[in-house]
Amino acid sequence: MTSKLEALTQWVKQVATLTRPAKIHWCDGSDAEYQALVQQMLADGSLIELNQQTHPGCYLHRSDPKDVARVEQLTLVCHPNQDDAGPNNHWMDPAAAHAKIDALFNGCMQGRTLYVIPYCMGPIDSPLSRCGVEITDSAYVVANMKIMTRMGAPALARIEREGSFVKGLHSTGELDPERRWIMHFPAELSIKSYGSGYGGNALLGKKCHALRIASKQARSEGWLAEHMLIVGIENPQGQTHYIAAAFPSACGKTNLSMLIPPEGYRRGGWKVWTVGDDICWMHPGADGRLYAINPEAGFFGVAPGTSDNTNPNAMKSISHDTIFTNVAVNADNQPWWEGLPGTPVTDWQGRPYDPANGPAAHPNSRFTVSVRQCPTWSEMTEAAQGVPISAIVFGGRRPSLLPLVMEARDWSHGVLMGAAMGSETTAAATGAVGVLRRDSMAMKPFCGYHYGDYFAHWLSFDRPSAKLPKIFHVNWFRKGADGKFLWPGFGENLRVLEWMINRAEGHVSGMETPIGILPAAGELNLEGLKLDRARLDALLEVDAVGWQAELNAIGNYLESFAPRLPERLRQELQRVVEALRKADAKLAPLAAAAS
Ligand code: SAT
Ligand code: MN
Image (cartoon, rainbow, N blue to C red; front, top):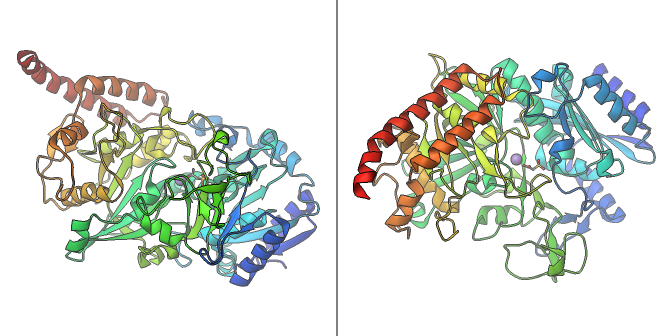
């Protein structure tokens, strides 16, 4: 087969000449094609059938044990000018990068099938959507792309109509970490990935296209490509507010996007609608508001910790037609991971489970499932114009200092809050876990260009005609002196979202502090929640000494983006430093008098 689009046909030919596959398959995205791929993978062992009585249509894939997460040190953004990549990215000269990776691609598909995957990121008829074509030699990647994107014939038709697409070339190669690169060429709208078959390294529509390449496109076209979930909160009056929230990988975006309201809220008629759990593209609308689409069509969610207690909607979503990667199985051949009841018998590497070998499921094990299988799936996911955003939320894993919630006084302050974000690292990327690092807007691994320019782009949305959402910062992960989480999290987070909506609607006034606006006494609805006064105080405490150190650290971090750090952000930080100093000067004599 060829395409009506000469540029696409030519590119496929060129890649085939380089990689020398045995066969070429153009994906049509049909269910029959998916089923045929599943049968083929069951036959060659790359998929394992799970219990079809309890989990119809569910399969397990075990990746190479040295290929279990994103590899940030091997992920490059190859701008012609190194300065454009910024200190937040790894860079290589584009010509040198092509030469290096093309040498690996040379002949790499011999005896294999080359799959051509046309896909659309976003609703197929939305002007906000963008298309791409991924070439891969992995059937597992094809099956995942079928779930994660709008893949196949309709996408190809749109690509042929528009004449342009992002080119993604992927081969699993030998799965050798020494021969692995994930390279991006934003100026050429292309991606080349070699040597990994895992998640964001291999499903090129996701992080590579929808974040790294798209963030750069968004900057030149005046929109935002962000690492955010999108959730709709419907109040008892039937009004729905949409909230976009950025958290680093494996910090609870999936849980928040499909939370179950606390009992009292449910009885009162509150509902939650899931639009997306990982990526959000936001465009200014004609009315000045920001409108968001989820470019993805599926969830690639972290399995461990997901259970009927933490996320019943995810559990329902993944009870059928789901691909599991690197989970364990129990005696009944059902998928199993830490956090589920029962015991594992086989670990993620296929060995008899032995606690001496570590967790049964890999900490970054995942499920791939269509968003439509989520009980809270919102039909607005298909809305061509997107959903209007009422609030933007930033957050990370911070064991101390950061309050449960604070609101930015204005857009510039909100951009500072996002830029200053920090979080303890997780198993979503290779490397140490639990180390605090700055992760501006949760985009450290995903921003396709210089963070200084990115902050300036965020600030540029503050125009006279704009009706921008309020910006908040949350921290579900603050711990008490006993080392335990102070806030119960999960469904109870709706209480915090309700406060945000009340702020957006002007129903509550909040309490000004030097670091932002916090809920005033009585503004957080705590009915039905066992949370004593001391814990609430600890969750909302503003520790002036701790904040001075934090602002200092933020200042040093931001200066690492000079000379491209926007002056406005520097001034905004200075304003907060001053406000804290003044407040502290007022409080200090009181504290001294009290002691
Ligand atoms: O990048 S992945 O898609 O593998 C997962 C993540 O880090 O969010
Ligand atoms: Mn993510």
